[in-house]
Amino acid sequence: MKRPPKEKRAPTPLRRLGDEGERRAAQALESEGYVIVERNARAGRGELDIVARDADSWVFVEVKTRRGDAQGAPEESVTPTKQARLMRAALAWMEEHGVGDVSWRFDVVAIRLLRDQPPDIRIIRNAF
Figure 1: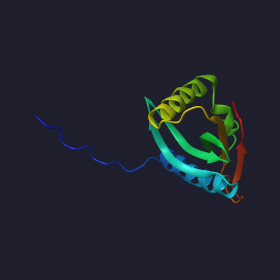
Figure 2: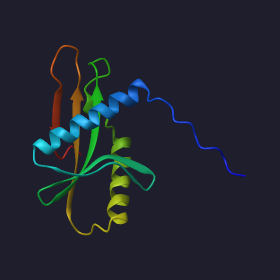
Figure 3: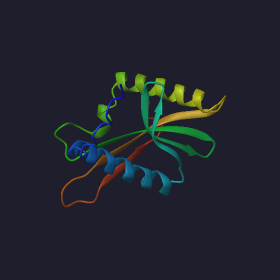
Figure 4: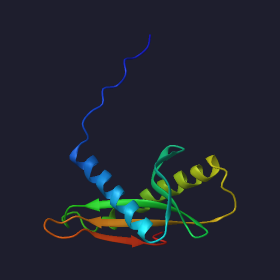
């Protein structure tokens, strides 16, 4: 017996914040010369926010967005456990896409969206 399709739910405020951050991150990266290859890339059992090219390097980008400082700086949430998950996802992505012996790295885009202020967007190259 076939299951009925899942009902699409309205995105939560947290999901909307993440989507906005990823959109802004992609724009910031492109303005720095990155070429966005894929967003929200599923690989193995993980997900990569952005896969990009920067000159001759593949770049796997984790985007962290905050609306304030109560939870600390956005990049502080990329813990060693999260880094290990991203590493597994990146290796799976490269294998699935036939990417061989190439230069690659992890960048973090840290975004703070504060009321009545322009967004604070920082690209942290070679973050880990």
